[in-house]
Length: 543
Image (cartoon, rainbow, N blue to C red):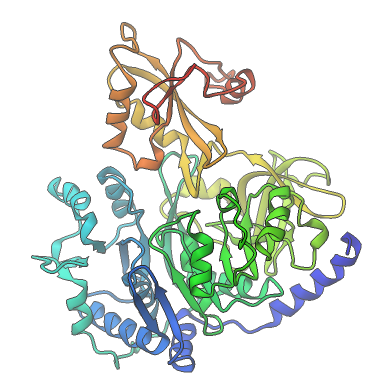
């Protein structure tokens, strides 16, 4: 098959998928599945031996919804949720969806400073938090700015004290109760925080229909229809949330791991009969095994893989691997269809999915000719409404129904989209987005540091690592402001994945005419950004 043959297939698939009815609300979507698939397995947190059928999930979700409602949670109530991958997360998420409340997922690796920012910025009225994370939360509580104890729900605690225990809440609820107010696809379901160029995370406003549409697209986009889906990413990210809704589409099962593991990924799929997964590229770096092709996987989503590596993995693991492009703000946007075998080894992200349009534009937001590099803009059904409380960012990012992704793309003559790089000053470490400006702000809090510039360093294992260039205050030296002191300072203010791995000192850095640090000039002038830097992993200077 070639590009001319695939175009009619894409057009037909788009029309077919867009014609399939979508539930009017998440309540309707979930309730229908609780009933129709009552005896089928819905949740499998296999490392914790926690499972739920659809019927059991429905009873617990409605009981929890009832108990939450008696304590003041209702339509539109914002509930921050800081819970690792355990079964209570999706049960609580479903309960809040039934109520029409709004979920504010919080990264479980955040420090007190970061938790305080997200909970305060979102104006969360309730907090659901895991017992293991309570010390981080209580440090903020001592400062006097927090959600009161009677609106804080503690997961996993035998004695929640003045707070409410999640298990107690569940036991108090009536599983036969149903809310008597309407909910809609337009309801604000999530304020999903994601890093951006403004330095601190921005809350992306995602409606209930966003999740319904993402699950609809994800289920139908490939020839193979999933029944057992793996979620190995943290639930506070968007991925396990849409993966769960996708597994639920036709009564399938979401199989959730506590945390990602490249070495155990394929074995998890074997043990649980997983036929669809979002597969990290690092899985392909594991030592080859004779039985690699003996697994139940039929198809995998890949994001930003190297083309040749993806093609080799199809043969190695006996599956269909297709490149896609998506973001929190737009959900799934571009894809390579199953039938496009001739593009399996390319770097292209494919074509716009159903319900999505794509354009490449210049710095003046004007469309560019094919073959020209520019910024990718996306519009379509249920793209994010806006950033929460960020009018300045909204004015330049959400324009006339379009979303400016900040990513550089090129569209070839056949119409295929290929990512070239990122306009945004971001670092992508494994699955984490890190805003350079936020790390720079923390570094510059340290007395003795005059200025900081944070850059990505290419890394075979994590994609990118964080490097900080530092200009010290006059009179200070690397012996008085040591790398160890800098790391200790960052540890109290940044999640571990944001802390610089590499540190370098400079008397001056290249500048733009506006006196901003010209990071592109640093990268262009340096063959290897690691050379001569202090490396946190070895605790010493590299040659």
